[in-house]
Image 1 (cartoon, helix red, strand yellow):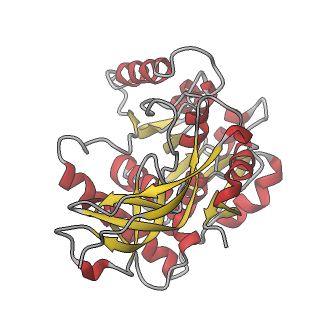
Image 2 (cartoon, rainbow, N blue to C red):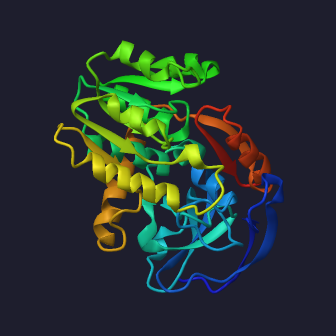
Length: 348
C-alpha cells in the first residue's frame, strides 16, 4: 500500500558561500513519495570533500544556492510511492545523491537504491559508499594494478585514501602513502609505508622506496604537483587524478582548474612512453548509459561491503555528529586533522 501522508523533515541548508557555522537548519513538510519514489529515513551520511568545495561555491557542477548538501547516505525505506514494491518498506539501502543527504528524510527514485547487506553498521557503511566505490573503481577498473605491484596514494589518511590503501593491501599490492606525521602510525597500521606530504623532498623520498618507478599514483591534489606524480610512474604505469584540492581556496571560475587538468592529461596520453593518465569522474557514463552505470555501482559497492563484513577492511570513522550539529562535522572535516570520514547521524 502506497503512502499518502506528509513527513516532517529536518534539513541542513547551504545558503551561499559561508563558513561552516553559516549552515542553516530548516524543517518542512515533505510530500508523500510520488510514482517510482521511496521515502528514505537517513541512518547515516557524512562529510566528503565535495561538500567542502560546495561550501565555497567551488564544486564543478554544484546546484545554485541555496540547497541541501549531502553526497551519499545509508537509509531505511519508510514509505513507497505508486508503482513501487511495498515490500521494500523497512529495508535498508545505500544511495548516492550528490546533494540532499544532509536531511532526516528524503525522497529518492527507487532505481537509485543500492543494496546493503544485513548486519553491517550504518555508520561504517556510510564511510564506504562513495569512498569505497571510488577507491575500488580507480584501483581495479582504471589503474588495474596487478598483484605484486606498487602504488602511491596521496592523502592516505583521507576518506578515499584510507579505503584505497586497504583495498590495495588486500589485493597484494605494496602501498606508499602520503600523510602528515601525526597520521604515520595509522597509515602503517592500514598497510602502507608513510611519507610526510609536507616534506620538501616528498617525491625524492617516494623514489627511495620505489627507485624503478611505481605502477600507479592516485592523486587528489592536482595543481603543480601533478607533474611530479606523473614522473613517478614506470613504463606501463597509470596516473589517476580524482581531485584538485591544491586549488580549493583559489578565487575565480571553479571549472577552470578542472579544464586545465583535462588538457594536461590529454597531452600526456599522446606521449609514446607506455604510461597513461586518467581523470576519475564518479558520474561518468550516467547520462548516456544509466542502467550500466548503476549496475557498476551496485557491483563495486557489494565487493567493498563484503570485505567490510568479513573484516578484510575496517571503516575509518573520524568522528560522529548529530544532524543538527553538521556545522561542527564540517569544521572538523576541513581541519585536515582526521583519519577517514566524519559521519553524520540522526539526532537521538
